[in-house]
Image (tube, rainbow, N blue to C red; front, side, top):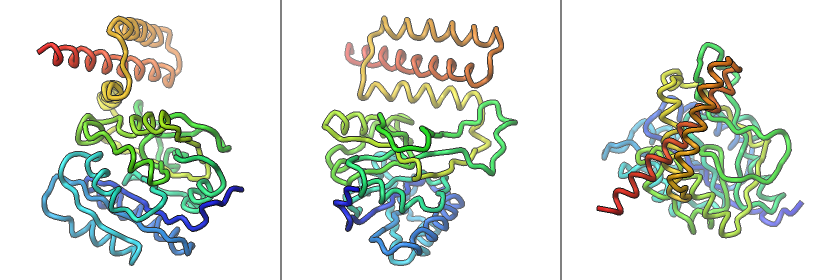
Length: 298
């Protein structure tokens, strides 16, 4: 055990566009975690609604956590802009980020702290599983973001949105790109941050005991939303990586062929969707690359 940061303070940041029902449920989960620890922990409810008026309901949820709860209102820009506003105000040596619709498993907070005290990693990707209360079988496109790399700690490449965290200095050194993320391009802010941090020497690790559950949102479980999500992910990736047009044309062509072939031979649904996801990510990259080229030529 390293245990070189035994007195680290923690800030848990929950950005939200106003999903008060989910935020209240997550706050209740966190209250149980906070009651079982003497650690210096704060929870920041980050209100990113497009309203200049602060939310009384979200403020009350923060206040329900007592002295450990804080409410920050930042309606300008998207999620990345709100995070860049909140991070300098956070008091923690370690910053942890949760999506507002997640549920945390018992022991989540202690697992996060143990990860940073027992390992040399700078950044953490926690485990994300579908909510066991949800029945995914009726939905052809369940659209539940997950991250499951097994039961053991391991090196990890990139970061996947909610249930991530790291030492505050890395987030201070590399602010989120405000062109990316929800409310802007729709995706990619966490991937670009991880790319920059790893290039600068940060180590990212996977912690399976930092477990959260991601619920199914029925309105999002559509093919159109599935395709749009992967298209935006591909397009947003151009902020930190470039592909040539010829290579992207080839990728789109063979991904389209693989997708069509998988449908014709009736392989299992998950394999068809993997080809479909890759097709729309590459399509997003191709369209974005062509748009950028046209913009430069103006």
